[in-house]
Length: 283
Image (cartoon, rainbow, N blue to C red):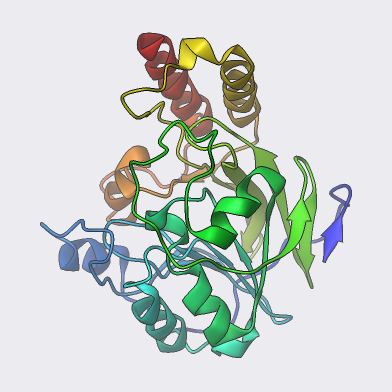
């Protein structure tokens, strides 16, 4: 399921018809509801990519005839709703073969353990995220140590490195180390096709420089250097469609509702630049 480099292969097409709502309906049902566990109906983002998460947190299902990959799982409270959304779309939970994660905090990883049990999927993560994902507690080098509630620990089945490709049938998702918000923060990129129209999609992980009262980024120059390198990496990705774990970070709801363009080739560069500016201000 892991590959060292991205071979040239046809990008996966949209899977079988499914019963999601329109982008406008999804946004309407989430009006004035942006909690991490606030239930939302599933919606097709593009081709074989579906938002199956909550009003306040994105969980992406990337589908194929060979099985599906779930990126992020919101909170433990949200996990049953994510499972229902997957089934509502006509997909079997047992066909979710791999779970990936953006970063190791409750709002994105809290539901992984439950969904892992429900699906039997393997959880793959970068090494810096492993301890926190398995214990449910932030690691000692997390700038936000002590700020986030504990979540149910999950079983990490495999480690991926920066630039490594996770493969499942025709799906090929590349891991990009974007540490900073947490040590294990990881962004993901892949291509999906709707008919003859193919797009480069990036799930850009959170890049805000948040910390507890005792942590000073300026006291950790190596961490800041890795943070900056990750932002540069993110800015350089081919990026037709940017999706972020928190919808507001990429104006995701407006784009689903078609009040802003879904496709924007400069979105990743802008997103990274905004993160860099916030880091500089924090320093």
